[in-house]
Length: 250
Image (cartoon, rainbow, N blue to C red; front, side, top):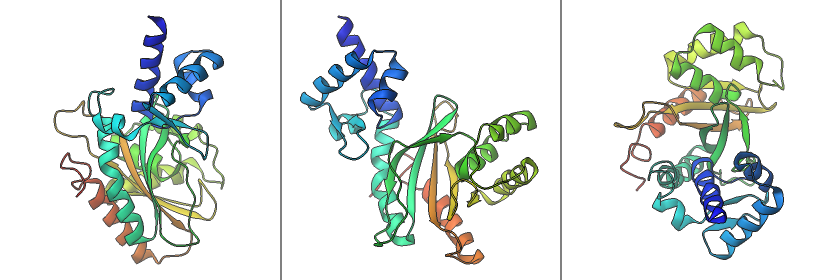
């Protein structure tokens, strides 16, 4: 039946891209708003999906996400396994620690988040998106993929920078990230916020593509250069640790 196929299309979309709003679901699936809403309400009533109170986004229920039956047992299970490690890292380093997934080839979506325990902290929302070239995640991806100059120019041009930065400086920062293993955006993507990012290496036997980045965000000018360097190294260790290599988070 057509409605069953449409429901599974929604489930596969949520498994691959994480929490989405109604408008995002209907845009990606081609459904009408009324059909999309009715199907989502049915899936929520059946306990397959959940509707978040903040942001009005829909996501797979934890049991379905962890089972990984809708995405080949890969992405959803990896995201679920990473959450405890993100939370620990955020508490230990007083950062907003995010897991970002490449979606649609042109954007990154925040699919999991660990928050600092401090009363005053950086606010991020699971499901938020940004251009694939933006922020420290964009630099980290470009560095890991060793993109040619033409693709670097294309990705840079798609970003609305909140603080002016020229192409040459951005390309230089990408090159620096190749040497360090992590990238830094100091207030260019979001004024007052310094973020660091590194890519999560593909697992053996996967398609060889980079699908995830891990970021750590702090308030600008709150750490010394040495402390930022130490945070970057710790972030690289996290991305290459058991939370992401298939062993799971303990």
